[in-house]
Image 1 (cartoon, rainbow, N blue to C red):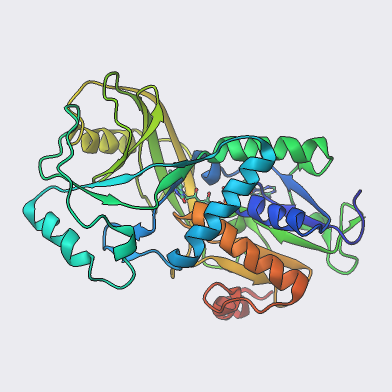
Image 2: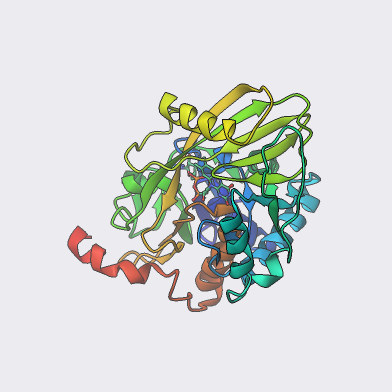
Length: 354
Ligand SMILES: Cc1cc2nc3c(=O)[nH]c(=O)nc-3n(C[C@H](O)[C@H](O)[C@H](O)COP(=O)(O)OP(=O)(O)OC[C@H]3O[C@@H](n4cnc5c(N)ncnc54)[C@H](O)[C@@H]3O)c2cc1C
């Protein structure tokens, strides 16, 4: 039952879900409202990978966030009675001898060695063009985000804790801490790129980085690894594969485009040697921050409002870590790590007039 001790979580993507889970695990009363105005977490391929493969850098906080995310999804899956975490090796395709050398050089970078297979593997699949072998990345896989969000929402719905509803700033009374007349302990806004519409947190520099993905059917391919070249090929089972993703900074809609489909198919044709069919095409907006760190914290002028956002292209791994930090801050008054605290963008608040 909702009381003035209840937190209201707004937004049911990976970020809002991770916050709700933290509240649940700690026995803190909460409710969730969400609509479907943004869809990054439902569209996401759900891949997790400790290495930024374009530059061979360790992803931010990977050594800490990866094991945390693994236990987060495992425990949640167990409670929900579903299997959402699919560990799968990721094979980085080598396109030349230079790229092979790059693999060996990268192994000397701090922290990378535990996540890189020490040798290039001369792996063959007759349906794939892999002329210089692959570099296997360790501790990779994917999370079935859509299934997880739907199942957890259904369970919370049965308990009266999830409502399909849109948040509007106009219905929040800061003095009384009420939403539509109902009193809350505080509100956590986890609205992804919807933050751009927020009167309170719209000052934060979140950009909508559009991403598009195809689902293809390639009968006979039989690939069981995630294969990464310019794009990734993610096996879904029965020779269905997800292929993606694009990055675009100048289209703030989640409408799939012909241009992205053509680009993905062109990249795919450089990798795939057998016929395939496109069976689905989806798009979403990644909430991206200039410094590529999550945005977490309490509004400097309205302390009952807090935010979790900025998961960028790594929501699967970032959301559990960011949610844990936010809930420890809200409940135990633990300081937030400076790197994710919204205080780092306080200068934008001053110019917003809030
Ligand atoms: C094509 C693509 C591929 C990706 N692949 C990966 C990947 O492989 N691995 C990975 O880790 N990440 C991936 N990402 C990134 C990942 O999707 C995001 O980091 C993450 O989903 C962001 O989660 P979020 O909860 O902050 O936002 P969202 O998922 O956008 O969730 C926000 C929620 O808030 C709701 N909402 C918004 N405004 C309101 C309002 N006013 N009232 C009520 N509800 C509201 C929305 O409807 C939505 O349900 C990908 C993204 C895209 C687009």
